[in-house]
Length: 161
Image (cartoon, rainbow, N blue to C red; front, side, top):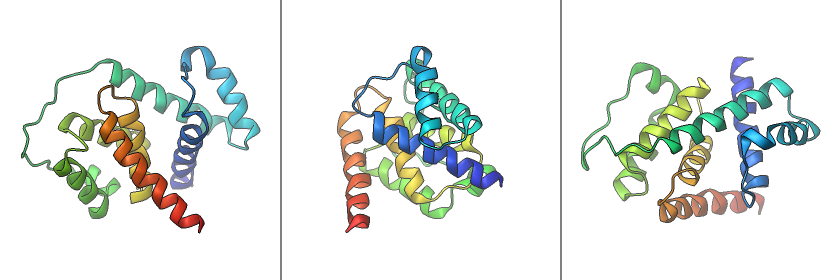
């Protein structure tokens, strides 16, 4: 049950991202409208609230820009809780994206923070969406955002055919 709840929160986040990407959303002023839209789409109101809180926390961390805390070439060690939630494939993707320069150390930490806020094991496809959402909320990382967006969207179109 708990994992189903978390996955539906991810589903809500993905739904919002796919359907509201072209709009500038102000959660403070549009929260009720977004809640109503998500309820109309069939999402549970409690899960909607949790998903919007997750997005609000992401926006707040993006507003508090901090300099990257890691040096290029450093290695990230994961806690046992992080390893439980992020399997080896997910951790490998984060390493790969950082090695390519798509993620910097600060973005990687924000991704891990948002994953841990879900407190559920996630798969690699959900991780790609979370990376996309984090990069979307980080000014100045447009190239990285477009790279991940292309990766996520090309895999989606491949699944449709």
